[in-house]
Image 1 (tube, rainbow, N blue to C red):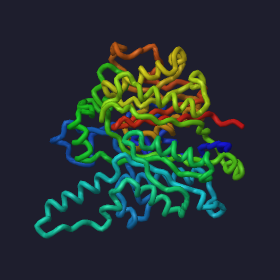
Image 2 (spheres, rainbow, N blue to C red; image 1 turned 90 degrees about the vertical axis):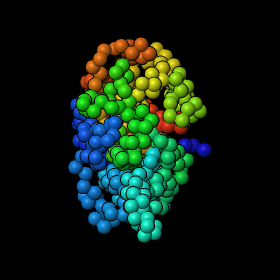
Image 3 (spheres, rainbow, N blue to C red; image 1 turned 45 degrees about the vertical axis):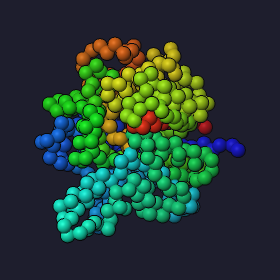
Image 4 (cartoon, helix red, strand yellow; image 1 turned 30 degrees about the vertical axis):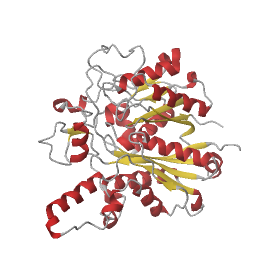
Length: 420
């Protein structure tokens, strides 16, 4: 069976550094940090008091006020970015076979705010018997964003959610890619969203010692590959891509951002939360993606790394890159856009895929900001080009995006400049 070619024809983003694609990209290349004091709840008793929150989001710009009340914030984010991406794609839905358009959209945690609120309400009023909002379950579950997007547009194609912690939306993109190239759909709306900056979210990650506690210096706290890194910064938001079979896109005269040419998956099979110290799962996932794309390592120009700013994770990923790419590793641009957006958990893969695609489109590699303390982590090879502090212009024909999740889940997607 001949596999179909798959291209990207629509993008949508809602991030801590921009609520639209143009705003997100402008702030990304200018090295703007999205970190600041948490406003979603009182942090006075929390070890970490800052995060990368979405700013000035009004759900009613995208969703009817009555319907918005039935959605957790993570679903509101999902619907918003899906509307952006579908609009950007210029699909004429009156002319499309809606049975051939699907939605594969993930969330690593889902409606944690809804869960917190309902359980608190029950605990406060349980002497009167259990009284839960009838929308409690539909608001909370991780698949409901995919369902809401399909209902909004009447898409009858493949419809489900992926959940693989921080690899979630890269898994969603990989699944969408495979469904289209196997001719199971013409178009799939894919990506991920997350809204876990809540008491339980921050408190839980604090209990694991996973978050930075650099409260006095929030905008410079996310510092991937720097020796003084002390944990990741919670982020929130969403990213959405419209993936489309190439001939279908050409037939309707669609603009094409890039082609998706490969994906890879692997497992560390090592630890619940820590990456393998030698980066074995990271090596395997990149090798799998390159093999799937039928590409040689030296064809890759840019890697948008997982790069969370954790002491162990950054070391293992840099080791894996050196192992997979050999001498070519020193010719690559590498950057962690989490230094600006924070870690969007289940939405990270989609947002970072968009950053990779825009790097191809614009010939600019966004930076890894906040590298201030010299090249003094003896476990990291600073001869690699981490694109520290300032964006770099270069032709990017091929970009690879890594995402790794708790549980040892690894996902990698590869995008290429489109040509006939």
